[in-house]
Length: 100
Length: 170
Image 1 (cartoon, chains in turn cyan, blue):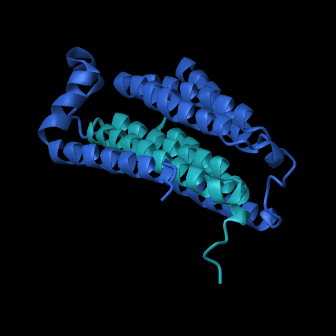
Image 2: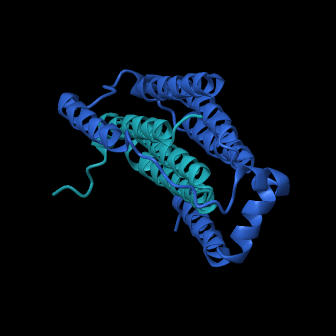
Image 3: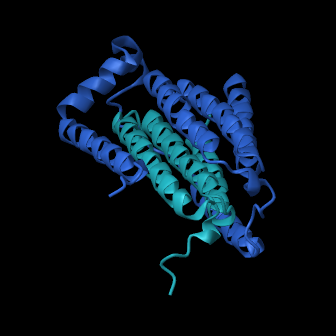
């Protein structure tokens, strides 16, 4: 039997990879992709905990996380389209319209 | 022995594919590596006796979100992005912060053990069926959050249409 802590460590690793990419990559699409990686790490941890605690609520929560991820990525990509129309670029450093 | 081997393969594959996804220069390659990553995560859910969520993972992530990303990469003409710098200049400090956080997380979960509540054992779930168990709980106790999910999905849909719509000439 695989212990629960292995799953938690896998989730931590995946989350940190996503976080690092979010902090370091400058392309907006790439940042949204790393956001998805982080949400997937959370889902892995939730479902593993739900399995080991024999409690279904973790999986319900993972279900809602998936819905939230879909909504978030849809609105992020729409924002990117609107921003791309003004700047002709998907680079995060270009979007400094609100900077004084 | 076999479960450990399976888990080892999937853990290594997931972490390796995640690294491949976030370091590629070409966004299409990156999205395709992410497809493989999502399939591996779905297999991991199967391994955790959550077959309905594995199917949902493939349908929602690999089917919907990934196609959305691919469409966007296709629509936006990002040819000049290939030559641009991929990473920010001061990435070493951020890497150090991430490594410290990773170490902290691994150390804190290394010895975690949980006591099973025993409500939903593997035998019970496989007898009734995973989708049925999940649906019974979702539509009874969590029906209000479920209905709010509809709103959470509807509002971004309207917002996405409004944001992506071309402004009409006045």
